[in-house]
Length: 335
Image 1 (cartoon, rainbow, N blue to C red):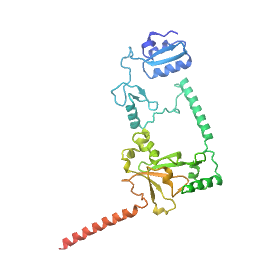
Image 2: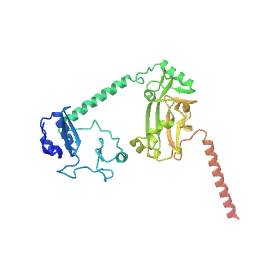
Image 3: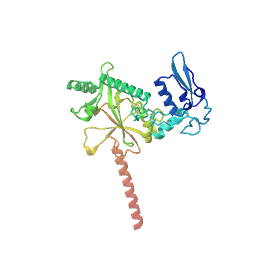
């Protein structure tokens, strides 16, 4: 196979007509790369009979055809986001553009492609997407939580196991949403619960559902992927920005106390350093635990059990002090 001189060191678009003898897949690959308007050096591997592509150091026909970083605008771009197609020069700029645009960096495999732009690469992508869907469906079919028994025997077994840990687990009748969502199981081999857990962030109006959370996992480790400034996902971090920017000492984890009147809603404060099992002991749970992650300075209407007495005492003391000051003022005016 012989390449033209333009293909060896030139721009991919000018060299497109010089390739001969390539298969249809390789032509589609060449066209897709040529559309990006990047400079490429094409080499033919005689051993593997495959097309190898590597970036050329400089395009002689277009010296400034290299893309600049769209985040900082200073360095030459090295990466391109598959989701939003933005150019970046470093890992720092990649993270910055994800935070600014709320981009997850994952290519949209279901994006619409017109028939005029449809190539063999799109066909291969669709085929692999269908394979991934089939693989996910097969994994779901093998999941124990999907095929867990819903008989009274299984429900009573979960209740008895929870009772041994001083947890009052209550279940709803079949047909309720929480009953249908609940994926809590007890692993007989490991002798521990794997809980279905819901995290609610009321200050950001966000909710996240976790499945198969082991009972020995601490609440701090559970919340790390959400509110930790370093380990959290950039998209989640941007949505929960008010939590990530606050010190960890201001974050409070609450759980609603069940079986109370609607007008007297109270919450239990949980210890983030302890495991999930230790925090659930001596508490009533309906189907699965729901944790409310709040900030101490913003939890206005959420009363924690045991703190309402101190708050009422503070309010009464402040009220009495204001009354005494008003009385003193009246006495001074009368005198």
